[in-house]
View 1 (spheres, rainbow, N blue to C red):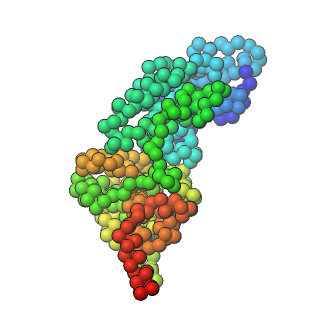
View 2: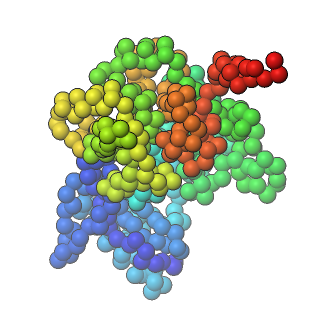
View 3: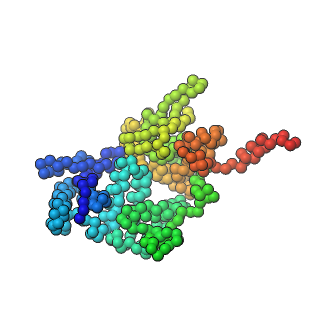
Length: 415
């Protein structure tokens, strides 16, 4: 068995208190492992045939250390052409039958690792892990090699029934997303979920193309246009919202920020400037946050004007925030909150709104209101879009505005 030393060793997952679980290599002194502060679990990391392996070893350091030692001995013996001594109690190699539970553990560990390195967004990690855990909790087989077409179709049926009352009438979209994330989990373990559209005999996908859940049909431009809040919906939402929820609603609505931008927004990002009339104005500075391994989309900083009412609301929030925190919207532990949209979904349920609140719904409302007072290029800059075609998708058509513009533009022409 060919092995390399890439990422080899005994590692701990550490809770840093900010919603992150970085890898920390366990130090060995005098043949004993040194306890790692705030460790949640231990893993063996190594590479085999140029493929990275991440194997969970449990939460007990001593047990994990013994398993790691056994693995090291077995690797040395394998290089010498000898049989392993600890196969029955050591970590399984790639030839052993993989359970779905173990596969999900590995998948989650890899996602957390990618997030810690800034290669995967926190929101994506939550979505991927939710799909994998949901599959594990419902699937009726034990091993990965037992996953068949019938197993996947049964899971699809279960999702439609289970999510019907939790998807704000968007069950089709939710199931489609779950299956898309599940396909990522399966592909990491060598399973292709869906055959190609032409469904050739050599295609190894488990499902035919027409069997897999699809997203709802999209518009002429190829993109599903996000919904927009009406004044009535906003009033209902704010009438039932807590003070914290109302702050968050106004933050999304009046700044048009992305979910991740709100998660890492700090008080120091609120900057004061003097405008051309020498008046003090306020901006939210969207910028890189190395401490969260976070970079703005398209890696470009931008300034978003904060109107006076929102600025006063935020300053009041800062004054009353207990305990004091650098983040504007921290979680209960004081770290980055990856569930901001979930907070608003809870408020939406209390308000009795039938349509699910989404990030793009707030951004489209912001864009549509701003375009009435500005121009398309400025709105593009405020939203942080690299392509103006993307910005155009956020704008709601206004027929009455078109009529007024037509009357004004052509008045007196040819009369």
